[in-house]
Image (tube, rainbow, N blue to C red; front, top):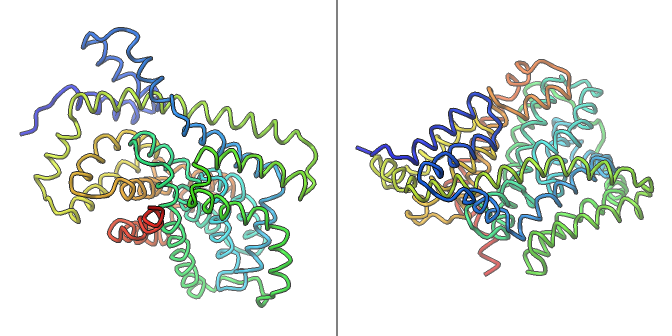
Length: 429
């Protein structure tokens, strides 16, 4: 029988606080602080642990990539990306639905966030699909599903956070997410083609035109080059995640000014304000995570979890299935970042004991928890896309079911075919 220790009590207190809608940083920080005081540590100790967690050069990549996403939303790049995607895949079965998926891949290569995808280019996509006669609920559901690609395609803010908390190479994680993201996009596009044939969804009524593709590609070229340049730079070792983020920030500002002639610099200020607000939330959560992770390690909660897990099976295939089920359940109720921060110190050590690469674990964990954005009662992507489309959430959930099944298939492939995640990082060595 597993002994119920203080670490488990801290985990339980966190879950209770989150479920009663306590702000995540409070839920993460208060139980460890109470634990630290009860144990008689100095009063300055919590602040020291939080500062140690945030004392990271790599952490600078997060506000910079958030800034990049905000700059794109305030500039003209999103419209150019949409036009190019429409010219390239709009003639497929499902037309604008296919454009929606393909555009999300391009946009995620710059923003690194699912909600930024929906709040930015998602608005354009939903409006365009509505104008073409698509059901608004379906458009919102598809936008939510396609946005799950953003958090694993570089630059991925959740993968950066995972790397910082789990102390895994952020560079390897960012590169590892590229192929799984492309596989997810291909799967969604194949599924959409089938849905289009079944439901008679329209295409854009045009045949593939090389001239139009080249014209729209020329207009969108700076944005299209961004993820390629980032991957090439990181893959070659030219720069790491933080340097990549700084480069992208300057690059987007220059593109807007010199290529798209966006000379009103007010948008930079507005993007900066949004970035500060979002970054403040992320940083305080990460600081609190430093306290939480320390308590988990000090009380050997990971060993307790490993004992429970291995009592069921020591077969890596079975253990991965059990961990995926656990994460899917957590994703129903917890914010993905909160669920990930809570899970990392508990789940990662037992899986690494079985010989599973922590980079592979990171891709699995991030993609798994992002599926929680599609599921009630939390379902932030669903709520945001429903708000953008101005339709009932229940209708969006109904339309999301087919895409949820497709994304579960992607999750299983990512989980049980590690080469999908580890091929590109292995080429770096």
